Image 1: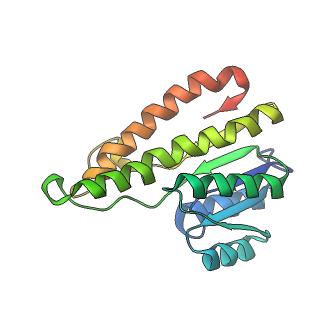
Image 2: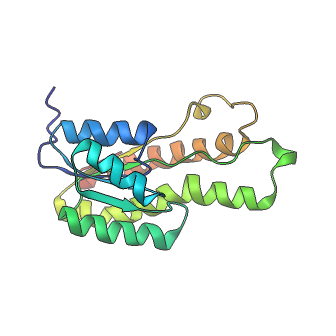
Length: 177
């Protein structure tokens, strides 16, 4: 299938395994130049090797400085950015009484703020390219809460709301969400 991705430049966060890797692999098969990113530099390199790219980066998506470094390096290596796929591991499990405030802070940074920051960092590149695509991987918890995954149940629907709002706000800039 030709999805028109030949020559497009894509960055996929949390792409050394699972859904992130599957997305990166599919983009590469469709002809996109892909940058993979993982908390573990070795896993990032291994994933890059499997999909045939040399663009592998380490990043902690919950950390603002780490994301800024990733975007600076990846967009420099790729020569810009056309596609952003935001992915991250899930926040810690647990119910309300079991989750201390530090777990809430971590979940906020990892789950919601990583998307907000990534989109902010991608926008100048999309505007320069005349458009772009943002895909955000969430969870089925956006439809129905999952037992013992309170933090995912709270923050994933927030991401869904963000994406719906961004889709409207960015459409006039030829940026699809």
